[in-house]
Amino acid sequence: MKNRLILEYYNKVKSANKEHTKKEAFKDLLNRLYTGDKEILKLIDKITLGAESTIVNIPRKDKLHKGSADTLYNKVLIEFENNLSTTLNHAKEQLAGYLLGLLKSGEGYNFTLIASDFINWKIFAPSVDCIEKLESLNVY
Image 1 (cartoon, rainbow, N blue to C red):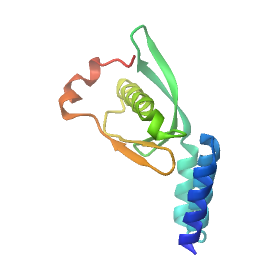
Image 2 (tube, rainbow, N blue to C red; image 1 turned 30 degrees about the vertical axis):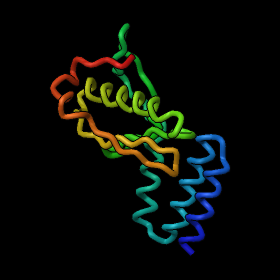
Image 3 (cartoon, helix red, strand yellow; image 1 turned 120 degrees about the vertical axis):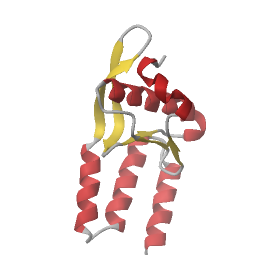
C-alpha cells in the first residue's frame, strides 16, 4: 500500500510542471501515509502553517529586504523549486538570504537548510569558515 502511494506520488511530481502542484501532492502523500496517526497529522498541519513565512532583514548591497520562505518550521527552512537540476544555485541563494535575515533578526544561525524539488532533497549548512563572518555578509 505505502509503496503504491509513493510510486503514485513520484509519477504525479514527475509529470507536474508547477511547484505549487508538487507541494500539494507532497502534502497529500504525507496525509495518506499517516492517516490515523493524530500526532503526525498535527505536525503536518504545523509545518503547513509555516508555509510562505515572511523573513525580514535580508541584507542586500543597497538595503535590507524581506522575502517569503517556502516553509519555515522549528528551525527547518525549506526552499522548494520546480527542478533542482536547473535552479539549485537560486535555491541556495534564497536559503542564504533567509538565513542571514533570521540571523540579523536575532534568531541565530542554527537552522537546517533544505532545497527540494519534491523528489531530490539537498541539505545545507553554513561553512565553518563563514560562521564568524555571518554578521557582515550580504546577499546580492
